[in-house]
Amino acid sequence: MIIQHNISLKPYNTFGIAATANAFCTVTSMDDLDYLFQHHHLNAPNTRILGGGSNILLTQNLDALVVQLSLKGISITREDADTVDIEVAAGERWDDVVQYAVSQNWGGVENLSLIPGSAGAAPVQNIGAYGVELKDVVVCVKGMVRSTGEMREISAKECAFAYRDSIFKHDLRDAYVITSVVMRLMKSPGADDLHCDYGALRQELAQLFPTTKPDKYTVSHVREAVCVIRRSKLPDPAIIGNAGSFFKNPEVSSEEFARIKSLYPDVPFFPAKANTVKIPAGWMIEQCAWKGKRLSLDSDAAVHDKQALVLVNHGAANGSEILALAEKIRASVEERFGVRLEMEVNTW
Ligand code: EPU
Image (tube, rainbow, N blue to C red; front, side):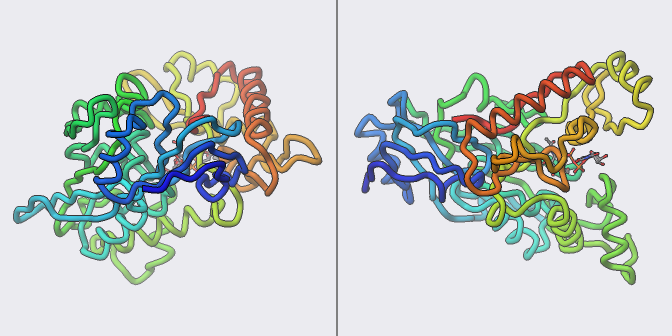
């Protein structure tokens, strides 16, 4: 196992921020992970576990050992007539997993197409899109306890999944190295098993496949439609640095929503958990005239011009500039709507 020093993390974060790590290594096997445990690296307070780097904002050079997880492999662990369980190693690219499932005509993750990042990071924030969340398919998450080196299974229930949230952001924060995720997929999903009714998905399906009847839609159709929608709104991190949605969509009480709706009758919304309503933060940010704007004329920190929920790095922005922009946006939204936005992206 090679530990390198003073490594630029620019290739390892989708925001493309040029911060460095004091020490850096890549884990490609369980032996590598055991080695790090045996040498007391896993429970050292300044060790950080990195997946695909698609949900972090680097705000400084890190005086830390950054461990990039590249464990690979997908295997079937159980199956019956209707369902199949697959165990996916943490370092698999999430979208490769979706592509594989769709190629087998297995249902459950097709709406989560094209989400950047690794499979191991997916449960931490319970990735979600177009009416589906990872929690809908997770059986359990496997990982190494950083303090003891033992391998454990955390059941879906124990994961305490919620909107862009799980126990790995709270009680089990930094407690585990997630090594794999077990998911239960449907073997031959019919059109009734697909989730086509979120936002513009059904419309996109009709446009892309005009000669296919909706009761004949398959997971491949859904994947393709989701990819088209995402590509039209969300910047490709390989071209413009970004970490997807920068903020969560705020969940407000029904009373709070009534107050906002009386002032802004066109406010879009989604029903959320009991007595709350989710308002798209992107809409609020656009209302505050931030869409497409830069922090300042000479800064590369900006708001994406097609989706105001996404902050972008046009090239040379550093993490502090992105954070400064985020704070300005938060202040505008709070002043106008009385709602405080919560960040979805983690800062390092
Ligand atoms: N909207 C605007 N202006 C904008 C952006 C959005 O008015 O600039 C309004 C529109 O009314 C639109 C609504 O907001 O209909 C919702 O927008 P969109 O469908 O693009 O989704 P979102 O709520 O902004 C969430 C997730 C995305 C996910 C999409 C689709 C969060 C924080 N984000 O975004 O997830 O892809 O729904 O399901 O929940 C991510 O987490 O990184 C991510 C990209």
